[in-house]
Length: 120
Image 1 (cartoon, rainbow, N blue to C red):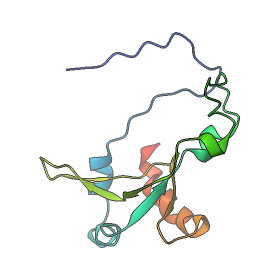
Image 2: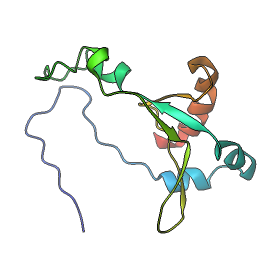
Image 3: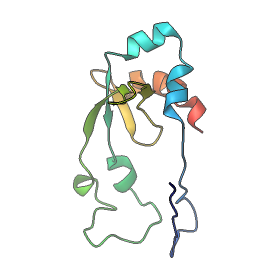
Image 4: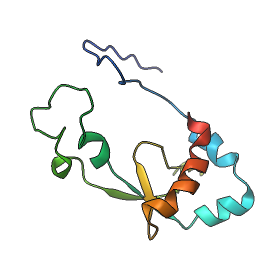
């Protein structure tokens, strides 16, 4: 089983496709931090990405350049569990996870930076 991606048009900068093992990211955390994160949720948003000039061609639906038309925000658990294997994974990323539920962006930044340090 595999996948192939063919890009016919790419931006001069950006446009990378990156992969990270979020099972490994979770497993690398201390038991204490795993326990803390287990009950936490995080806000994921694309407003800051699609709402700004990104270098991509203007979308026909005007989503790029207009943060109010960008994909809506979503709240997700910070730790997710695979339904069949029951294996746990960290569910945050440096691009779209903007803050922890109930925390400000400023309060969230140090922990988000720590959690995403191995994803680069």
